[in-house]
Length: 149
Image 1 (cartoon, rainbow, N blue to C red):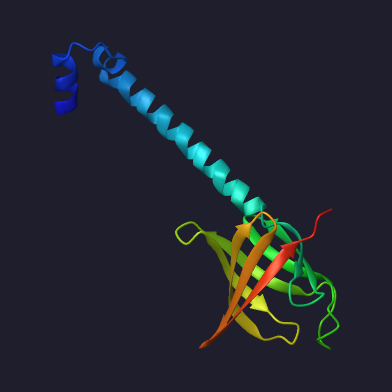
Image 2: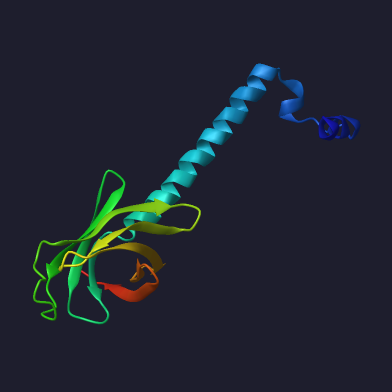
């Protein structure tokens, strides 16, 4: 209220000063909707940045990360040959969901042997993601590099 009085005192003719409350609310709601859509499009862009084919920096293993109803999964498409239990088609990353506050994806990693651990994916840039796997007191960080088509 103080700012409106200040504007009136300065004899500034703003649109809001000459409209009724209903019109002010409509304009305010329109602005809120616009910025909400804009924000959601940015989140969508960051989510789609992790989809695609990736290769582990420490092995020949390749995965494809795909989205299903805003939940992300990673499936092995090329085996490294280092693990006897490893096979194509194994879901390595399961139920990864974007966490807005931490700016990363959280989910579960399931090793080819069947061991389950918590996982976090963080986009480093458009060509690299960081996978942090945590099990009790232990953690391991792996960098994945995007495979260009």
